[in-house]
Amino acid sequence: MLFGGNLLKQPVFVQLKKDRPAAIRTPLGDYPGADEIMHTALFLGTYPGLTSAMLDYEIETVRNFVKVSR
Image: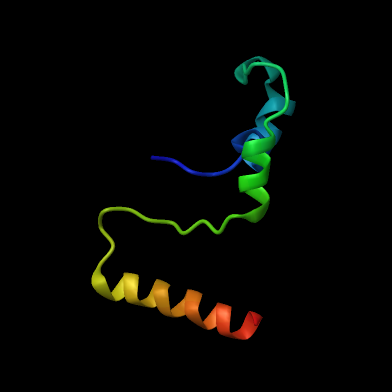
């Protein structure tokens, strides 16, 4: 599964639309749900090869961020 909010607003797609407009074909309209996710969610990169040590590091990093941000 891929989560990334409004992918059409990611820099690579913005540039692609400028360089090759025909390469991006989407229905016209706004995507408020996707925009909300893009602006408010925390995305953590993941893949099946993550080790326990890698996951522990990710968890520790998020916890430390939350402590500092309070």
